[in-house]
Image (tube, rainbow, N blue to C red; front, top):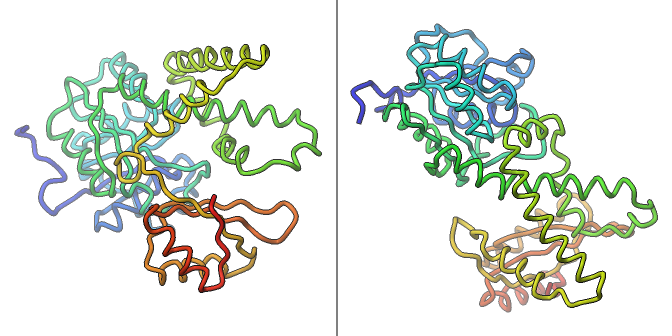
Amino acid sequence: MSDEPDPFSGSDYGPVLIIGAGLVGASVGCALTEAGIEVHLRDQVPSHARVAAGRGAGSVEPIDPEAVALVVVAVPPRVLAPVVSAALDEFANAVVTDVGSVKGSVLRDLAARGLELRRYVGSHPMAGSHLAGPVTARPDLFTDRTWVIAPHATATPGAIETVTRLATISGANPVVMDAEEHDLAVAAVSHLPHAVSAMLAAGLTETKPAHLQLAGQGVRDVTRIAAGDPELWDQILTANAPAVADQLAALSTRLGELAERLAEQRPVDDLLATGVAGTRAIPGKHGRAQTEYARMIIEIPDAPGSLARFFTDAGAAGVNVEDISIEHDPVREVGWLQVSVRPELAPDFSAAMSDRGWHLHEG
């Protein structure tokens, strides 16, 4: 342990300054404020900070720089390093972290500036949305989500502990990972999926409108994240360009093999089976191994109160719904609700819901 005082030790947390009042920064503020921590907000656009304050993320009142114990930098990737650098200079008694989605390039930029980085520890909460702005902030955004802590060789133990406790206070599960290893990981599980989703969605702009009328949940699922802010994602992808390019090259090889076989009308079942294996490799709920659930389809009216009535009835049936998705009928005013329950509970759930007037079909 370090001899330096830890600003998050005991019960006297903070004060914390959050620079950048977008979705992530404002949600951090909401989580800390809800935990009773004094939070102050700063944003290049003052109205964003005021909106975040209105959402319960903290105060826009100025604070004495010497009193700040922790600075959380939540700004776009392109300006992370200069804002972190300025924060280390302005807030001499504070630990500084950033919550950017790329860690290696920021650390390299800071080191190139010749800065003393003992008080800096990068981090990355693995939570977010294709939505943006402080109006979408909520205190439970990080609950049970992974929050990567990326210490470096010169960071003090006290600084690392401070940032780790920031994650736990926000409800997240901290995971320590080297900055470069983090960037390789997010290239595979976050940045590549967004790039592929965006390119697939781009192809839909060249699809006949009559053909788009046939679009079902499959194409909606794989293109949903493509709705993210293009300017922000340009910064994320370019900041992690080498790792993402490697992932795209590997994917291109797999797609090439698929295209070649289909052109020659050869079977592709083994390639598709590898895809199934990949879905099962992703950790399931609460980080446990994937579970094969029984899936059922329910027709639900597209009317106020329908979902509330369904969940009330499901709760009365005494069976936990493990997962849920909904697809809207393109013609009728109904939706198709797909629910997942544990296989051994499926018969009882089906019978109980049928007794309450719902019609379930195996998915």
